[in-house]
Length: 436
Image (tube, rainbow, N blue to C red; front, side):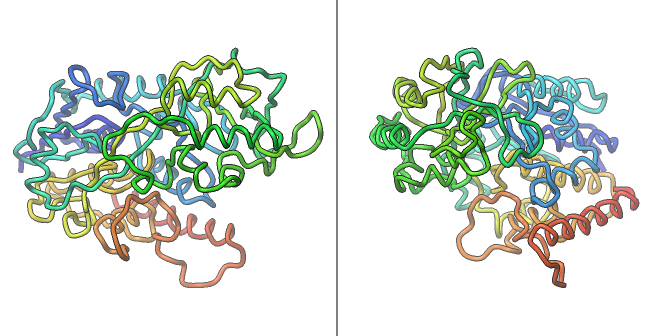
């Protein structure tokens, strides 16, 4: 059998898939178009670029995404290796210096002896064994080819990114450092607002002018990345129970919680840039500056990137893909990343890992690898293939609800989740011992 595989797309999923293949001795042709043609969401030419937040979310094993990250680490994930190496302080979360992280991924992939990078657009799905990991903003030509092979694939939602400001422009006389409930180190800049300030801000946000996004309406938003103005329109207190909740943040100036708090998180290792946590938006740039300046600590903020929105397209994967992300009608073709319906950086990486490992086994004539539903990696593959879908298929972050239950009672939600994680990691260690 030919031990060469083409991977189309060098995002998180494509980079991870290429790495897993190459580490197992499979020759990889990695096709990436960003040098010559970027999507509306991309800025740099580096691989595995983070286009929205710089956070990989919780790092705790009582959290499903924390479990997923630990599974990836134990299986030699290149994405997790680079994320851990370029961590910036973020309390109990894993956040990274996005530029340094992406450069490290790019250097490791380009220098691997089994990976050849071709800088060009793939207009059609290549022949032979191929993994398509071109993401939710796949080029028009390749999208047309995918649509011919995958009926009902034109499903979509809208994703948004938050603004980034310089630290020097934050008014620290109106802000304070802390992490919620004093968890970890005080890594977040907290920008408090009193009731009157919040009410005026909320009114301005609800009436602010939005940028035109073709086909957009509020119902097309992915719940996990909702624009702050859409959230505001759901009610006056919605933000105070969401990204602006003051709970667990004691203002050192008063010794009490504030009415509302905006949090900022480091966006680079030097601490010169901070992103506004949970403030994904598609307001016009001038409106972002006007409305967000109503937050006292950001009255003179200098923006290095305004928030923006883009359309994400994904496959109607149940019935199209199997639990290994292979196209059922043409198994030589696999898909990976957000276009399969997994949602989030870590989930995209996990899909790329599973596809890379499974494809390597197939082209090398080895038996398939069984990632069971008791593992977070396996649960995602089962979800997108329809094994745990009820009703209409929607993009999904990893959660303990799609991981197989324990089968016995454990007192306390946190204890139960930690027990699920312990079982999952034991299974991962077993798979490693079997030589995957």
